[in-house]
Image 1 (cartoon, one colour):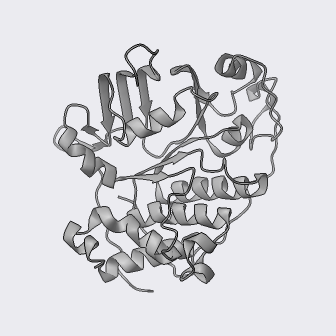
Image 2 (image 1 turned 135 degrees about the vertical axis):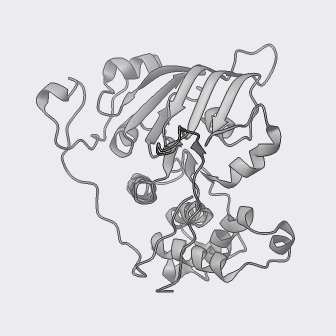
Length: 314
């Protein structure tokens, strides 16, 4: 695979005056958005304004039913708002429903339950991340180009599953299955990676492994990472920004290091004890809120692909 040319897809840009460099539109912009599942119920989501810039690493936390999954599904176009505007990668998908499919092609989703085809191999599951980039007829017939196959194999290598390439998904461990899910969005070349509680079905050691992998690959490829996380301490460790939801509304929006007990109580409505210290490096005493424990242990290094080539996200 060495020496193979990697295709680059230019991201959406906004128009600027002649001679000025283009300005990238934010990854996500929500304006006056409400989502309700029944007319009589309170809104599952009620967001006055939310902007996520490209390349940010964001964790969404909050109690069950706070709207975390609804927010992720709204960004991906799976849920439609009752009111307001949703703009993803410069495309206003509420006003232009026909563009949702194009946006969805550029947004990857890592599912809580893995969402793999059990009888398919690791490689086949990852290859299907390329479906949005191939002719629909070809995909039905199972025809993929060599570029697609190389992109899928590069993604398998990236998540350290080369030994399981031809192994059926239903024979993999839970951690390996979620690695396949991460590889699938890498093969997709997603500009935004959405992860809906990706570690809730894994034990603590594997949770650190998967969240570390998501944080690393999103940073390496410049993708925007937005993930819902059940444990606030894990959110602090692997995200730079935290959005706390309570009853569908934003109760906290700030840096991971500034999330303290008072903020957690506003989000959860009760005192929350975190048992995993966040990863904070090179910070002065004055910058550390009183209820945040400092841990200067760096994130464990991960094995990188030996091919020397990377999938370049669009």
